[in-house]
Amino acid sequence: MRVKFTFLPISRKAALPINYNYFLTSLIYKFIGNSSRDYSAFLHDEGYRLGESKKGFKLFTFSTLRGGKYRADHGEIVFQSGHVRWEISSPVNDFIQHLIEGAFAKGREIIIGQEEVEVRFLIESIETLPRPEFKGTMRFTCLSPITVSQSVSTPAGMKCHYLRPWEDGFSEAIRNNLAKKYRLVNGNEIGDSDFRIKIDTEYMNKRSGKITKKISFKGTDIIGFMAPFDVIGSPELIEIGYEAGFGEKGSMGFGMAKEIVLNNLADGN
Image (cartoon, rainbow, N blue to C red; front, side, top):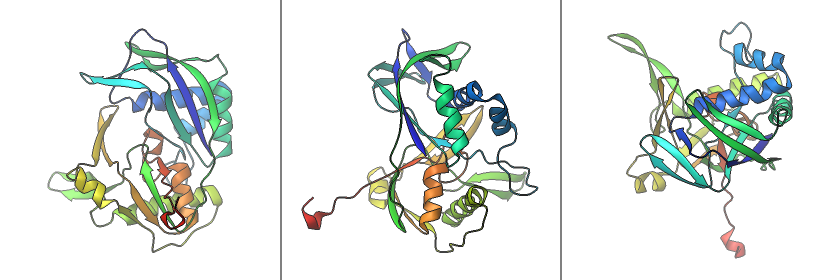
């Protein structure tokens, strides 16, 4: 399920650092903790795990802050006026329930940030969004960067390499990540060796190939991409990507995408 928050900035100077993802992750855990401290602690400390795996999946993703009138100023985003939209998604009902219940638990005013960087917003509304019809081929646009990585050997030792969409292994890495999420949510394996993602090359060429985006999360740089893309594969895997995020680090604000609905020109629409 996907929910959309609509905020109104009310601080005198509503300015956040460009790398604000950590603040949004913290706000999500705060909302959930307002409803259930136990579930918030479970999600933060453990997450959903496959077998004896040490890595837990959080099974949620969220968008960047969008809308309103804002400007970039010396490494900050200054929200000047208008409503700000923020979308959060998860296939886990408990997550969505605690998120919504906890958001209003202590009033409509919230704080994004911490210590010297705090911006106050008023929650204007929270609404659930309609689900698209999942098909074997769909087109999406990114609401937050998509990232996927692999470990590579270097003279200095193993290193994390963030795969670009045009590199070998990109689609396979996304597919493997989605298959794990699917198993966690549904309890069974899924086979889809033909799964692939195709970036909109026309869009990429117009931007001279500059579709990568680097975000710093608690001092660690993460590289992803933002561009329209097509997904070909089983509707079940595509649905998991929509709900829990395409690729890695959904809980850090990566991997959220929105369906692009193409007009049927043959019908004159």
